[in-house]
Length: 471
Image 1 (cartoon, rainbow, N blue to C red):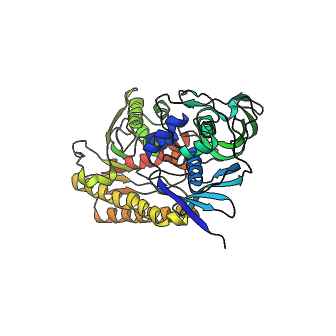
Image 2 (cartoon, rainbow, N blue to C red; image 1 turned 180 degrees about the vertical axis):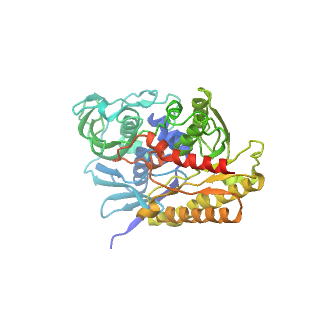
Image 3 (tube, one colour; image 1 turned 60 degrees about the vertical axis):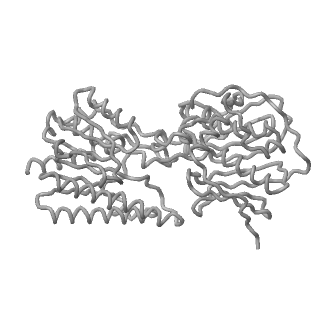
């Protein structure tokens, strides 16, 4: 029976990420900017794939006398920050596995060398500026470029000393350089590193890379890299760009002037997604939108400016829904008469190892926090209508989202309970289809137009307005 040996454990922190960004010059926001990362495929910062690879190889070099000639790494799931990361070695299969929460995130198969590697040194260039914001169509098969290595001039550390001692600084720098290549150049800002295969070599006189193959069905691009210390094949995706919502000027075309003039709406989670769209529609109809944000202050400011620039009304303020009992916004003075509740964690396919964690998070957001906020408003406001978005996943019985569905069903039950126990309270909890938001990005998915969000939401906003008129 094969034995798996745990050779290292660690938690990658944001500080670690920033340090590696200086070393590699891969300053792609998905790795170092928690606010920007919210709007990406996985919704949070991810460890650089090459950071994980170098760390794993460093641990292998410390714990064994292995010398490698080839390796192949596949990044099947993202490594996230502040989570226990286990590094496992299978000596029989010659394989390293990085795991978080019982799931395999990175697999590294390797072949041992017969002789000690003899690799070269090279001067590094100053750091590059920012990640290229390019599209899949920007590249063609056969395109060829220089493979340049960069380093933040202020960076003086030797982050992987054993690897550097055995294989040379240039080997470590070039692996870090693959991170810069993918995250900053090709595919650039909207990239996802899928796999790397490399064989050690010191035969190349210049460093180059070229586009080997492209698959537009998956937005997949294959690169071939000729470094001074290895030859490599890379698989990378162009991940979806963050969703850009409907502009306020377009919302003005969808509603009648003044049709929401009696609406003062508190929109929880109004800095992006469906909350942003709702705020723009209500303001376009002459209503007042009060949007809240937890982290996305810049996003909220952008929404507010888009509305106010064309004489709409929008105000924004920070609100951590998890701390609603400890904060006291004066909802009564704002004359709030509608609540739209779009607070949500990142929704992802549920893995068995994360089952209980996901369940607890969903229950908090869709039930506990919502109920606390609703009861707080009900005690302060005489006439109130509440919009609680549920999900069509309930009717579709969408596999892999069991806890999400159960939490939304529990939220619907809370809505019914609130309506029964509070005379005159109007509550809507429609089961919305999956719309074009950051929550619903996928590598292979083809996005529909964000205008669809407005067309789906507008009838509900009008019905909420009818409630106000009846009151």
